[in-house]
Amino acid sequence: MRRAGVGLLALSSLALLVGYASAWWPSVAPRGVALLFAAATVLQLVAFVLLGARRRDGRLGAGWMAVVVLVALVGGILITTAAQPGSAEGEALLLGLPRRAAFVLYGVGIAPLLLLAGAFARGFAAWSATDADVARLRALRPPSDA
Image (cartoon, rainbow, N blue to C red; front, side, top):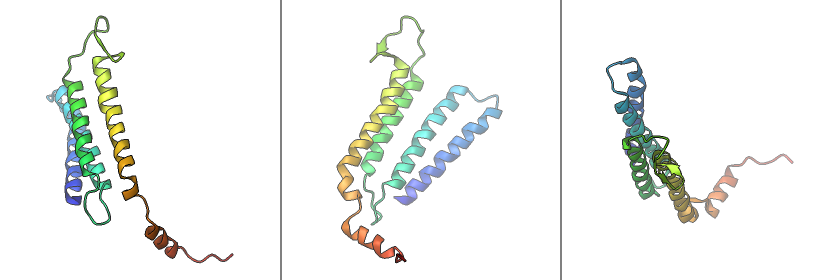
């Protein structure tokens, strides 16, 4: 799984580099670059989650959460970039915000945050330090001169 995370990180970083470099290409459509930036940013976040979710034995601890966050982020960002901008007047509000702002705030910001918080709470006992881990750390500490 480490290889997939590193590969995804490299691919998304390359896509971001292409997106930044496209600023000097006048023939590139800005909407296509916006979608490239959105997809590359989400993939980079998922790559970091994949790399950080590995357990000591090399298996993926919360890999399912990376997939759920990926779907939530990609869905929220694609809906936001695909939605047509409305006029300031007369646009229907979604939970008190204009549609596009609501997708960004609730779909891209709050939903993945709640998903990750739930995953952390669910797996806290398995991911936190055990008594054996604490004993190994204490054994590594140099003796004090006190």
